[in-house]
Length: 134
Image: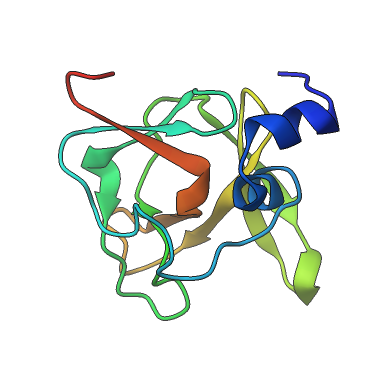
């Protein structure tokens, strides 16, 4: 998805723009989707692509990773791309939408996560569609 900077600004709220386009991070516990939802699917606010299933969402108990939506896996293979991120003086794995390239959050190894992998995602970049509305 190739939009100009002005088109992205028109399409997104200021917070969504700061996170999706400028690799920002929302304030912990500020997002609508921090706690797991019932059946449904999480979509990218930037382009509407399916990213995560509510089936893989869980409430994190890992210090430093609490306060953002947590997922153990993506909804389907190829939904996201993983990139090296060495910003802030540390090495992390950035998670971006495979369709629009928007920054979603980071992936961490986490022994407390259901499968040992923790997708720590900003709530403001997600849109939730309950099962049946997808």
